[in-house]
Every structure is written in structure tokens, then in C-alpha cells.
Length: 100
Image (cartoon, rainbow, N blue to C red; front, side, top):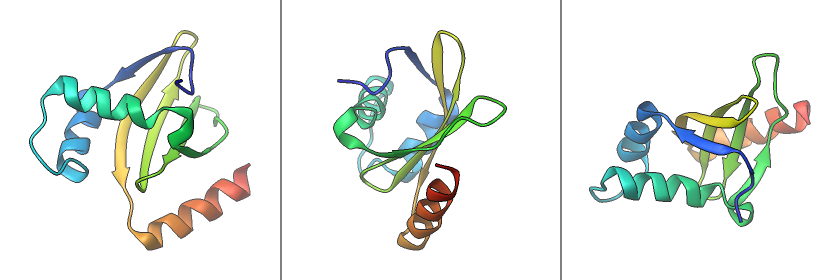
């Protein structure tokens, strides 16, 4: 079950970043989209930051990935993917706890 009930749009930039940083083998667009949507499953989500003034939030998932998303009335736009290092995880945890 997906975390969101809205339509999820994945930008080309997010797909390219996923291929560069996360994918271990070559994947086509359908496989990348499926992998990103799989990260949006409730069981894979660690934390979600509250939305800021620009309706932007961060979604931290298992596998040390951070998705930067923008929410509109009917859609969620995935703007970029960040593959984090262990020291980045500590910083993100602190940032999420301060906001939430």
C-alpha cells in the first residue's frame, strides 16, 4: 500500500539520480519508476518531514535514500533522490526530529 493516495509524478532528474546513485545494474524507465514507487510503500518509509511553505517535504526510506518531493492539490512530484552516507543519516535524523 502506497503512503500517498495522490498521483505520483517522477521527474526525469529523479530517475537519472536513481540510476546514478542507487541502481546496481542498468534499468529501463519502467523498472526505475517501479523501484521508486516501491520505496513509497508504507513499510519502506522511515520518516516524512512536515511540508514547508513551498509544499516541499522530504521522505526518508530504508536503503538510506532521501526523496525530495513537492505536493500539489492532486499530485506528488518526486524531484530528486539522494543516496545517503551513514554520517548523512545522522544529520537527516536530527533535522527531521527538529522539524517534527
